[in-house]
Length: 405
Image (cartoon, rainbow, N blue to C red; front, side):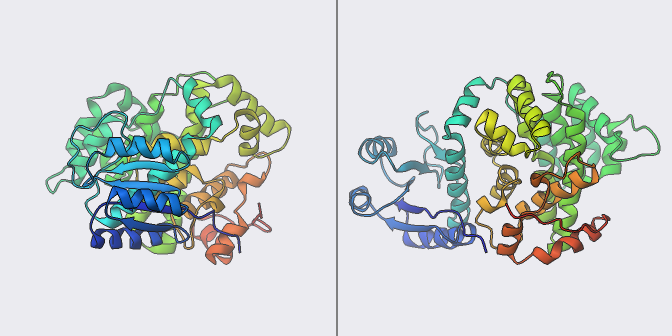
């Protein structure tokens, strides 16, 4: 069984004991090998940081002068990552330099937001990612239409016809949306030219997902990069999303989790889109190394870029406030052992779906990146499930298909 990634110790400053207990329970589910301590005031926090090894300081928004405290911690304890947690929305207009986690009124939600913040910081603080972010001018933006559609679908009085109207109002996104539904992946017997008909055909969940991916791809697909096809990437993303949704349903029978797996599958390779649009020469070189050296895409990207499309996407898409499970699935779909998973998760579904999609697409070489990670599946006790997932996805069994990284 593979070991979990290294532990972290978190010190929470402020907030009452009951809230901290909820936080601790939430943290233990997300990161069973992490731990947290709690102190009520700043003087005790200083003593704890001096005498105990803490990696992170989280300041509850009930603590006065958080900006001053953060500056002091940065000066006195440069190895500690510190930020303020907005709990009761008391900091309506925080200083721009004050790093904040979105509002969290209960401890369990706060734990997810704190873990997301720590992971995002670790990804973005990598020297290679920092170097890339300086060069990136075109960032993936959450499509405005997606927010409108999500609100409409969550409303008790929401209608698919209104959703179709939102799509029609954005001509560029609408064109991409219709292109996606008319693509070979869906295999429709006739052309769909009206968003209303497309929405009725897709249903609420797939409509929202396809609006999301159509909006993202419409921002990037006009950027040239030698040897890169945005259309091929889009088709692969659709296939991974569909397979991930199916695998999640097979394993959990949970519609909400399967929808989340669908979304994460759609977005899992957005980092490639960002790289192709912003650093096309470097990305093309990495793709060439992948083919000619017969090494994994991730290994080639590490050689050329110092990081991978997956961690870059995790860094960028974390700003969309996607659920932590989806962000981790995007960032670690090639290296699931980097997670702290002990049970089947969205990451599991997307990792395996990506493998299955490459198999179905007839990848030119059955590279290491396109095989399930045995160490990860052993940790979860799921090595024997891959054949059942293949069968459930309508794929033929495959011999010797599990790889140990």
